[in-house]
Image (cartoon, rainbow, N blue to C red):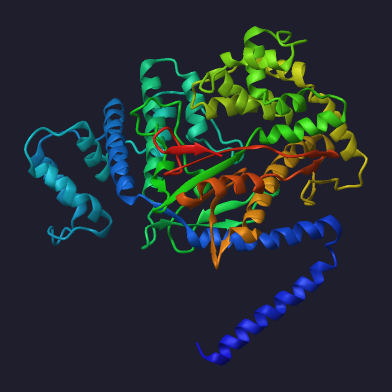
Length: 547
């Protein structure tokens, strides 16, 4: 590219950008202008995260990928056998001929087609070796030869809906017949015989393992770090979205799974993947999550309307989900009239791994945001991986318990009244100054409006912590940061600091999250919980301390 073309391109681009900015600046004023300037100020720390990346244990990831793939092939063989598919022989001589015919060129069987390079040599080594073929090996051969029942192909629809005669399930948007994860989970509830149940269990497990394989196949850049990209205005609610890095490494790191308590120890999906993201030498990784994030906004609005229970519970460190789980066990009047110290003692029976507590965590805010009965039941069913099946009466009891203790209907009516009194389209302004307009019928937008501000406020509180970290002069050592931001997941911040700076860093991180927001006219500082250790999992193996 010539210098003239470079200058013309760059100067024209910057000139047009400036002209657009001048036009738009006339439309932005007051708190909206503050929100815009704040987002611009966040670009530097977000770009720092994009460029810095996180160290990744690629060797351990490869080993885990091998385990997951082996389990996938074993289950695939079971599904093939159940559905009368897959290779029909275990004769290695016959199978070698099938593999050559399928994977090699007809005119020269010594040359393997490009798409089969990864499979050919490992499969042929197995077929030339001694011993019987294992289920996993048979599953891999069937998959490579495209003889198995591919859970991602239309063949699965034919098997489930035509051969097994399961009830038809259609996608709610496209109206097309579907076998996505939610559909498979719904079909589990409707299965009437062992073959149907076993087929669905296998299809779901294979799909989950294949998804994990795809995530484990992400690769680090040449320096051993995983990176991602961010869009600071990626959602209507102000949440930052994440995507594969422009360098080609990484993934949407906001979806990297934590350990899964619903899976037994030793299961390939129990550990998650966060332990693969490790601290740099002589450093600790940390993560800070806002505590009871949604509840503080809901509680503040209810408090402003004279209903103090939720906000007072949160201030007393009583988790609303735990309180509702207790009510479902003992009745809606079981906590009435009790002091909060007594309530905290009673709630000790509700453990974090209890299924009813898991259900309440999943569903309490959906109830506060007017989620319908069927949708709420489907959400809990999906989030629990099919373990929690709620009838309409179960959801009604759940809803009644939430309304009995917290009375969110007062907030619903006040928000509806606020929206209906505005000219169309009605608007809501969050603590950050971000204004969102709602388009649609008034009776349709209420749920969106209720769910909007909690997400806005939790994102803003986390962004403020990142902003203060970045602009703190005491956090600079020359041009380097002493506490580095590495990643942001909605209402959580991941970063690292030198081990030698631990005591100082803990004090500083606490100060970064001390940000009062004005919510429903009340000064609210959303608290956080944090931990630091040797990797992002921050489990009993890697956690060193708390923040």
